[in-house]
Length: 233
Image (cartoon, rainbow, N blue to C red; front, side, top):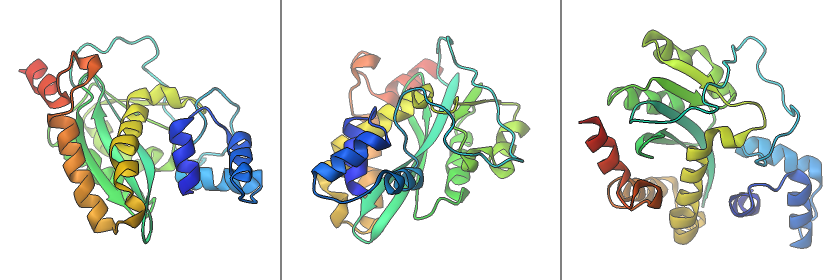
């Protein structure tokens, strides 16, 4: 899983066939079926259009994707969320974050050692305590299609948007955030040697740096926090 994560971060267009070939070339005897299972466990897929490969929970409502061709013009216009996998010394954890598309500002985040959606709801509720968006975008994962996750959005009349199946680029700003977190923090610090509590502290420091100090070329070399708050005032 650690090797798959690093290679996927480097080449997000690699599907299960290429990842299987990559692992075999590294001397790991593993078949494609197992690679596909691990990719599902890690919630990753290659970034390109593809047919439906997994079944969603039948009684969960799926909302249409609302952001194709939409110009993001202000903070709180669009927020989105996602989950990524991080290896630590005693296993692995999942990181979720809520991000504002206009400013790239991380409004909230949580770590969890399971994929139960409690940590996703906690991150959502913290973000909503700051402000609320016009549109909230997720993928079609069961964490986000569950009634207990959608209720806070519905109660506030927030428009719900969900990525098309097999279209990871529909949530491109979160994908870019994960790439930044992996390359500038997780891989650099080698979280494989950290316990979860140490990973939490290190991530907390990095996300504070990302929000307050990291200069983004797309933001005219200003920080996400500066853009988020100055554009709202």
